Length: 129
Image (tube, rainbow, N blue to C red):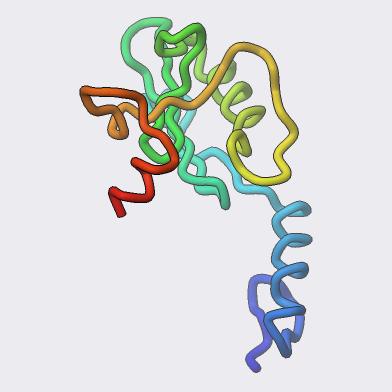
């Protein structure tokens, strides 16, 4: 197998690759992209694409792969991009296996998954696919 250029190691199996990639990710976490006066910041992660976007003066929102960050059933609005990025980083793993729960009132809400009618159940989700 080829030497991993970015990881700087020899990988001979998938069994080696997964923990190696995990260790690399822990030591080299993804960074926010966007300039000092950007209207949008993006971070590509294993848990989805985080986006912090300016909606107006002092109004910043957060998305994770299309799901909006909400608080008390309303879109979470932040006064600064730094505050929005900080909260996005805290909630990056929400909903994924082995994620530590964060109980601060924020959660991800995917408007695209909403349809008129009763709330989806496990049976309706399975029947859709």
